[in-house]
Image 1 (tube, rainbow, N blue to C red):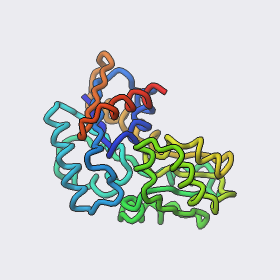
Image 2 (tube, rainbow, N blue to C red):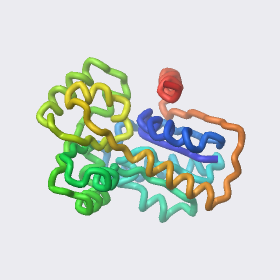
Image 3 (cartoon, rainbow, N blue to C red):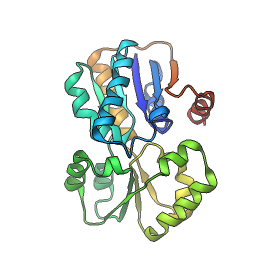
Length: 241
């Protein structure tokens, strides 16, 4: 059994990529919308929150856990990996992908405050900075996406991204952001998008082989910490879109 968690429904964008390559496993997707957003929480609070989620998923029988949230990955992955004797895969912004494919291209990286100010992100950025990367902290954007507020999302993007017209690449450093690629293109034009999802899929495949996890009949369980029915409805809508 494989556990995947996020602060809400953003991690579904990662889960969809996982299912394309690794469909025949038992998955539990944990949406922690009760504690959403993660991006503005203190390190201490976020460690406690994610620790409780991992503990829950372990008690459910998960053998591998995927942190499908850039903020939680950046802040909590070292603590969680040190505490639990289980493979924990953590997503990270796709700076390496851009560096490998378009080393000199002008790039805009969108992320939450929690991700952008974390030590892990600063180390990653320093490693792949080509002096043509613009960083944009998108305070509140993930909340708008989680709530599905389309008109407010468009207004937010117009106000905050118009100044970056002319970039070639956009790194979506929050798993909610791939849900609004169309809206971002309306502001920035035909940019290239990069996410950390493919890196997660590659690492998960490697871990499954190392753990010798057997394929089963495909099974997906959805759990939301707020227990709101509309969350599950939107989960399946996004997953099957």
